[in-house]
Image (cartoon, rainbow, N blue to C red; front, side, top):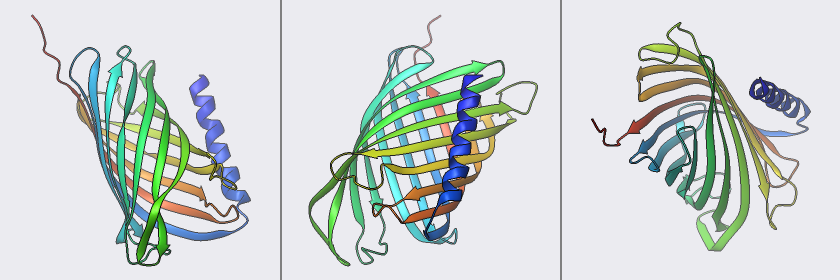
Length: 250
């Protein structure tokens, strides 16, 4: 199964990158929570919404990031869809802007597709982002204008049901997920590799259209200086809804 080999390769890449880190300037523990909704209105059109909130350190100390993302989705078919939209991200006060929050405006575009291998399911997406982050004048003041770069993200998720029923209401699945982020643009010099997120956990399927995913994520990130890194241990809890709002005939 090609997707499984790819997932294994990305896992090995994560282990290698973490082992090779020459200087870890920060190791933190965080909690990530989020609500994700993909609603389908017609055979061709739908809406993407996700809202996330993340803590800063030691799992519960202060807030790190809030994110609101919206998009319009076009369905090529039941398994493949295109989405384009906008996200607003707020970075709460941090080391280099400890008295002011830092906003980011982020248009984004994505292709997402699903593949079934028996009862196992694989979800993949490729996402491009245009990141406009306000400049920082000093510890308590935002500057004029924005820093800008492009970013590409590749995400793959493997869903392995732990029930003979497969993915069905009131069943549990084992989840493995990896997402790789690559920067590019004129302002990117030392950190074309941005970060890798490796997640392992479980999914509880409440209904056909809603589920809860929970588990552990390791996030390894290279900062703009090139020789500075961050390693995050994250407890991640996400609630998903995939609503089919099409009128049923007959």
